[in-house]
Amino acid sequence: MRVITSGKEAEAAEDQLIASVRSRGSETEVVSIGYQSGHFDAKVIWAHEFGFWGYFGFPPSEKSPGERYWNVFGLGAPSGSVSIACEINPPVSGTNRQAAGVFLSDSSGQTHMGHRGIFNANRRVQKDFVFSNFRGEKLEVDDAGRRSNVLYIGRLNDPQFPAELRHFIDEAVRVKDLVRRKSTG
View 1 (tube, rainbow, N blue to C red):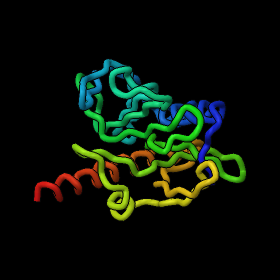
View 2 (tube, rainbow, N blue to C red):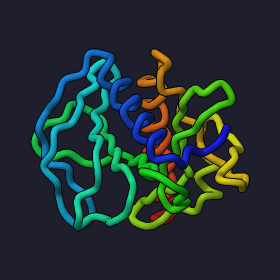
View 3 (cartoon, rainbow, N blue to C red):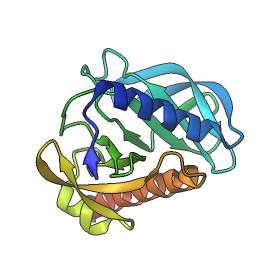
């Protein structure tokens, strides 16, 4: 597999991601998404069958500039003020190894989603810790001519993708909780 760097392919992948989450009987709710330096009022998709909500768009200007999608997810029914459980933020185009999310393409042209293992739990979590504790598939991919390891989430047009996304969210929360317990214990 290779990391998608074309802006046109990334935009199509982002549209596929949204369609996949929306496809399983989801509803839209207006909430205030809280993050470390503020909050952002937005419409989120409530994937009630899987127990998570998602916001798909661009980061608020004060959060973090840059050319990346801001795909944030939380657990439970969205209402009022909600907290982010994890982010999957692929670049809009080009190569950005600091952006946590990646869209991937396989040899048959299918589009997939992965994550670079960049998590924050009150501070950045060491990638070695993430990769050694994450319970899920890990891949080595062609990353614009370089080999990179990613956490595999799933194929975007697979009917099971929302369930795979929920598994990823759960694992991200679990790994971040491990880090927090480790730092306080």
